[in-house]
Image (tube, rainbow, N blue to C red; front, top):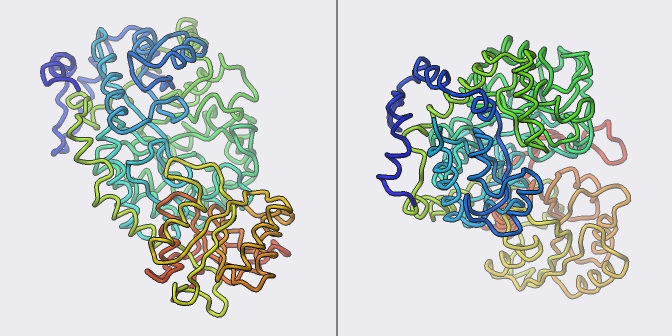
Length: 597
């Protein structure tokens, strides 16, 4: 970790130029001094400040050879430090697959190395370091950090206080490891059960309820001096196409947009949201040009800036996604995004192409330097509000004192218990007791593990039930069990007192549905846990009990085990409606439904 002398030396110039308040005060940022900083920047430095870029490696200066090779192949530099020196980017985004997030102390060292590399450049500025820490199924920083239930689970809990606690604790832990911006919360209103990219990342289908949760979570992050980012404007909740791989079209009328999609974003703006991320979607009612919202002046400048009155940072979703690359080449996309009103260009697939395209657009007069200055001022305001000019570095002591503490982990467990939703309980079967159902067989889907897991769901549940006094056995059957696998599970079920089966996005012809039916046919009572979409319950009529956890992270699975065992009661309520499987136009379980005992 850098010494105090290193910190003071690296930040002396910019600190003297700015009257930025201490963490305890709320002094306004002085735009005159920020503009003075901008006036001393070269055009190349200004262009760089607009980009937030990925980089491979656990270290800013000494990554593994494989990461050096990946950086050379994709960016043309060896390390994060070289990236900053060459392109003067204003931000870095961390990914697990880029090997940025091995453990808290490594992340803190990487963050300090990135800040040092930027601050020691001529006219050096602190960096925005960001990641997608939504919790639930999207987490880049895993254990031993505290992992919370995801957005739809939080929507099932419905507690504004819990959402604020999530933001506060998650923000404090991110800040301790040097991450000062989070691309969360998701402000989309998910009204399409077939949405392949949002789904449980949304708080739910009720725009007012989503708005409450978004604003509360934003408030929590603000308390921890981490920038929250509401996404994906103008609303990605009613798509059946994943914008990573295609170009979704939203068919909502302008009136419906006002009543549905816009509500959480208005709440985020009212809550003082630090940044808003754009969506790579076509929204003809808002802009009939056929351009994605990310490249739409009517949407970003006309509606977001003009009508919603938002003057904070607008960041694009990743420019490597297919949704923004369908109409235009990678050299045009960043220029058009800036012309539309974006401030930050996130993760272009080819940084040299994107960076030079913006530089050329200014030199040729398509973009003015004054237009760049507008965005850079917003970015520097955010850095100043986050106290990065005075406190760019973090310490090992801060990591140990903050990340994954017993109090934080206990808070996550308590919140998870309030989100677990019981939808079916025939008999009633639940709660189970070791006295009557000692031998538990845990079978089912084991989807790829997000960062909040220590193992497959069947293993995590088996360990949790064992701790609760049951004799539990795990048998993973996968998301598409074969006939032979189902036969093994059925044979094991005949020797059990009860079966707990995890399901993952059950469809009409899914082998998971066949598994549950054949398990139930043994006469052994079956408890189904939908570990992603709660819509599974509509296709599992043979299960005696059904619960929804909205994700398969450890914190949610352990909470479900405690609910099944009666250690706590189920308190979650559906934040989305569940339609009948045989008649999708009819609601089987409405928003707000949930059983108790």
